[in-house]
Length: 146
Image (cartoon, rainbow, N blue to C red; front, side, top):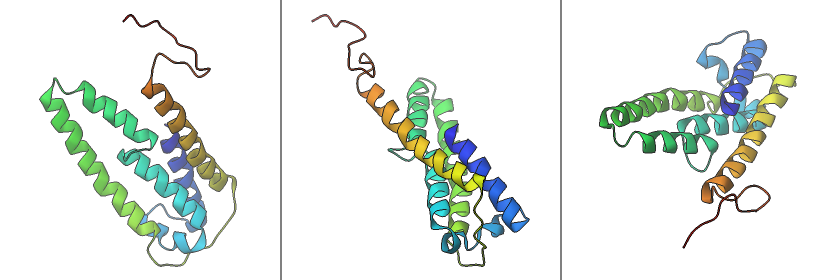
């Protein structure tokens, strides 16, 4: 959800600056605002489910839960492939040459903070995944019988 919120702020910013919500409006963004291009790319890669970002863990758990239902697994993989086609086109347009005017706004800060918050979320999630019986203070949440 953090990645989606950050990307909605990103689209709002692009629409306000360029006056268009077309994908071609992203041309030249990397040359004008590298931090925004990098942050939005990280958020898109997370939605793709590439490790070690937080989006990977959601897809991993979803696919793991659907192992007993092959049709759901196939549909999930098909959906991931289709979404990759859309996200890669957006990333290509961000790094394509073009004219872009850099404008500072709260939306840019929101995208950056979403990307930062995304990394914090990933680190907390991955620590809990390693040993779900250990809470953040390091105390065991359950006893293990041997």
